[in-house]
Amino acid sequence: MSIETPIQSSTTIQRESGPGCLIQALWFIFIGWWLGVIAIAIAWFLNITIIGLPIGLAILNNIPRILSLQPPRREIQVMHVGGETRITESSLPQRNFFLRALYFVLIGWWWSAIWLFVSYFLCVTVILIPLSLEMFRLTPFMTTLKRY
Image (cartoon, rainbow, N blue to C red; front, side, top):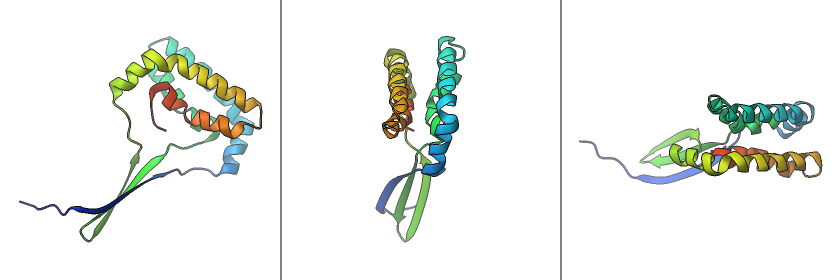
């Protein structure tokens, strides 16, 4: 019979790792803006075919990476248990699969199309590119409630 030592303190932080802002900006200017449109068009075509739906959703869930090399956020949890420190790293916790599927069927498929259109329009204005990139980062959430 083992006795667990209670957690004395726990800290959770979100971390992003990936290329710097300059590399992301250059990628977006030279590659991301046109590759993103192609990826979005292919994803929507695959979503219509039903058979291609998993691939289409995977593409839409990776739009931030395709457009500007934005990596998914990771969660790091630091726990002090007894005299020992434990560090764990994982992807962000996600909502229930069935809730996400229901959301996509009822709302996500049409809402994400509007969201992407507005995001892309803001991107063309140049001055609103930072807002546009943040909207693109939220695309997986708007499509399937996936935290990116």
